Amino acid sequence: MERTSDVIVVGAGIVGAVLAYLLAHSGRSVRMLDRGLPGGEASGARAGLLTTVAEGSGKGPYLDLSVQGLVEMRTIIQQLEDETGIDCWLECHPLYRIATNEQERDMMFALYQERRQLGGQEDWLEPEQVRREQPLFSPRITGAMRSPQEYHVTPGLLLKAVLQAARQRGVIVQENTAVTAFLTEGHRVIGVAAGMEHYYADHVILANGAWSPNLLKLVGIDLPVTPLRGQMLVVSLSGFNLPCLINTARGYLVPKKDGRIVVGATQEHAGYAKEITVAGISHLLKVLSAVPALVQARIHDTFVGLRPMSSDGMPLIGPLPGWEGLHVATGHAQHGILLSGITGRMMTAYLNGEDPGELWRHFQVQRVLTCKAETEV
Picture 1 (tube, rainbow, N blue to C red):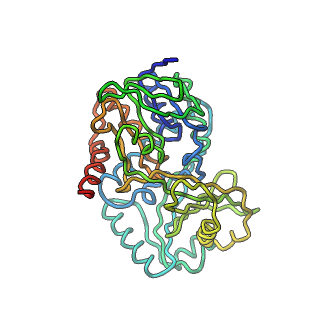
Picture 2 (tube, rainbow, N blue to C red):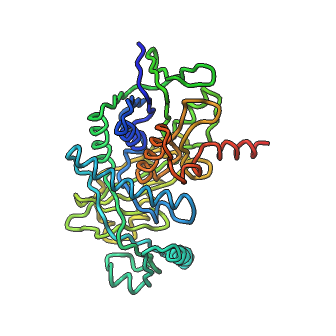
Picture 3 (cartoon, rainbow, N blue to C red):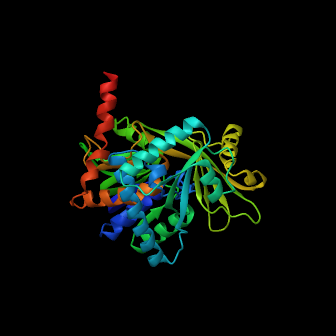
């Protein structure tokens, strides 16, 4: 059976779902296909950090993208809550980036100085100041950079809201629909095949994360994106409420409205193996040691997801060289939620013939394909 739409989005995680929603909001007809259940991969993570310091430190386009990403996501979340009535648990807490030895302290203090030069609002705290403000922290802390307010959201609620809002705007969401081939005319992609079903569109966008390279091999493109495994814990302790976000050299702790605390996350190159491991749990327990009282916490849940990491660590957004009508939105690694809004805004503007903004050119696919080709020569 042949079915048509303006745009096909492959992948119904946060990046794909927000993109589909924004495209529909702009008047495009959209069909979204997922090989499993929406949000069944990396978007099922628990933390939902929207922190521009922790998620996009350093100078240049990536920091700028993360700052704009936060602005976009706060706007989009409010819009989604208004349209659906679903509370996404957008919360704001102070963030403490803590050091536990002299080497970490030196690195953290250098980051603090850089952030201040860029106009950031962070403060530097010596160990005694940290203990005064947060006596629950480990006494091993050698210093901390404090950001007065950073945001986080609950990914499952956000995904539920964006899928509902997308459907309300006419997006067709098909789960358990694995794309098996591209439909082409010359060097133009005109749709996809999923088994015996053919779906036609003016544009096909791959937003299926770490699985994007597998599909692109069908059209001779070797996209340098690999899975980055992230293991997480969800814990709670009766009568205990964590009043802030904590980021360490090993990971982070994120308190949620229901009193539970998300502990994450490992960053492992383990191929497509989605497994909770003893080594992963051991790593997360070391993260948990930033708050000694939490050694008595109850483990509610574990999670493992595969994040798409590009060869240079930055997102890949836009058209694929050599193929008209074929695009990607992938490579966001552990920053997919933070960057989903700005990715969707830029891609929607581009497809509608509008100016996607100055940052657009920095995240084009050609940069990694050229770099890869030069490396192989």
